[in-house]
Amino acid sequence: MKGAIKNALALLQRASRTARSDLDAIRDRLEDLQAERKRVETAPDDIATIERQIDRQIEAAIKAEPLHFPILVRGNPVHLSVAGDLKRSIESNPFAVLAALDPPRLKAAMLATMPRDGLTPEVRSARLAQIDADILSSEVAEEVACREVERALGTDLPRRPDANPAIILAPDGELGIADNPDSETD
Image 1 (cartoon, rainbow, N blue to C red):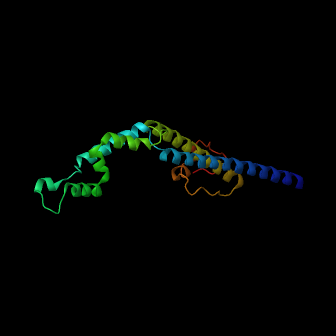
Image 2 (cartoon, rainbow, N blue to C red):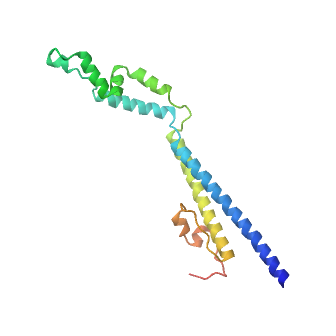
């Protein structure tokens, strides 16, 4: 009898280690997916998107009419000058002054410093959707593994602090867990 109990305990310990290892692998995968999601979210835009953003910024700056020369309108008081008006405009909004004076060169200078390996909005959206789907399926697999281990060991397992509450609270059937005839019914 002692041998049977000892064998059963050894079998239970092996199963527990395997289940825990499987659960750790799922959690490692979730961590990798979350890091990948963050990388995709923060990846630079593609150069065409950046160029459109620069065009919009230059256009808005020019519309703000940054070059003001009140001296030319008010007459010529001794203490004011065109150079002084230009200086005030530059101090007030240097980007807008550069945009008004030479938009193509300003744009070229800005584009010269931009990354060339960015993501288009469509690619970013598609990648995020795929990563989100992978995260969801991994979170479901994690919860299924937790519930199976809990049933086998008769004890509760801690969940990740950032676990999806909708998955944790989902009934077994929604997670694809078949009804266990040995378990209590709701």
